[in-house]
Image 1 (cartoon, rainbow, N blue to C red):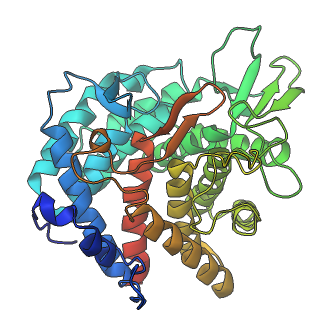
Image 2 (image 1 turned 180 degrees about the horizontal axis):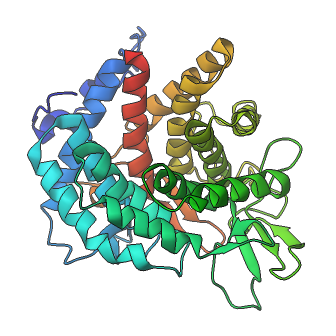
Length: 408
């Protein structure tokens, strides 16, 4: 746990001081060695708290949650939005980093605005929403009132399972668009089911989670370890209708955030189940990402690994943050010391990049969000080169995991 130190904005605005703080190379003739990772982590937590304190001091959010900042305007959403749990989750991570009661109070306030989500059977994202908010709150405080909410959320999520297909339905869309779509992102919601089965919930929650994960192993991946975004099924026969990459450059391309969800998802599944097939899949996905010839030098991916190079495609800091967090965890789980060192090294490079001025916003800018240069949905021209609340959440998680890895 670090001690939060307040510092003036004019110090933050000093490019030389900030570059030294975050371990960047000096622009002078003499190279300065990178700062220790421990310093990068501490200063990033401190700056994150400053930025979110500024955000919370803006006009009240009136029961809504910040999602992004576009066209000089804060974009807010209601509890139903798939991203609604990430802002309270980021507040919980700041509480964990600082021990400051103000973050616990703010995290509690925003978390409890999501209580009704536990009964939402109309979305697979109940896992995203509840585990990033109530799940983090329960982990850090042991608040007994949070447990039944998480368990009820798992019951609601389970209603979306189709035994013929062996998957949870992702989107409820018109039949003209999709029949029974399953997106790679849905792996992330399995943590809710596994948590519930381990904490007194319905025993079949674990069976549903593993069946969904195994169906994904069979149907979502290409031989090189990359994933398509969507597999659409016939709910009567269980047969695949089509495979597409809905948010990527093309159906055959590798949408970066999709690869990030896949890596994180199977890493989490191995942590929760100790089933070696999930570790093997996570390591195959990691190899695809790490060895990809179009992963930029700073290791923050373009929005799609196969996006045209002219003009240079935009980055996706959210994909970078998710991959970074997943790699720190995978480094602690792999059986191979060589692989562990490789995963940790790439994750550290990503973390230093995200914590640098190239991606980390100055206090009072970027709508109060931490990271710049996220890509929400490139094909729909939505949230392009914008901050994203989930990018912030996984960045803060990556800081905690980097800190934990150093302590081992």
